[in-house]
Image (cartoon, rainbow, N blue to C red; front, side, top):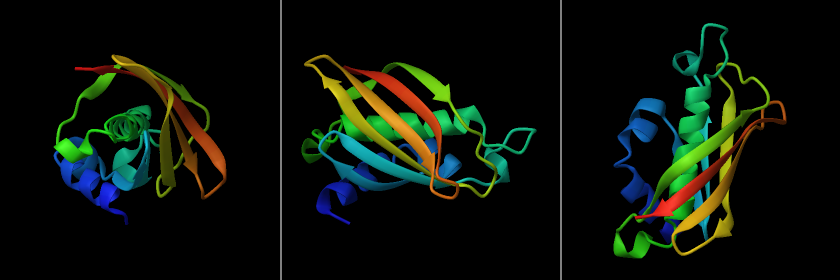
Length: 138
């Protein structure tokens, strides 16, 4: 793990819903990019036994927030927050799925930015969701 990822893990541990309640783990941070993982359990699933859209959305929102703030980590400040998002759920993911979310900047501006997060399941090679998030600098 590089120093940037270690610093981001420390800062974003304060996002207790994503890290403690949901169990999402930050695996890497780069220049306006971030990758997170989640091993889904029964508690992440809906009545059909598939991972709920809310769990997938939380994963995407968390990854996008880390990616957007990747250039703010040195001064321990978080300036970018989600303004809106559009989620496209493509394939179901059952309990015990290993999920990987990779978020990267598609457009960077001074006061807003667009991030795309792709969630995939290496277990079956399927793309599970694509979430596009508009971030705003506050």
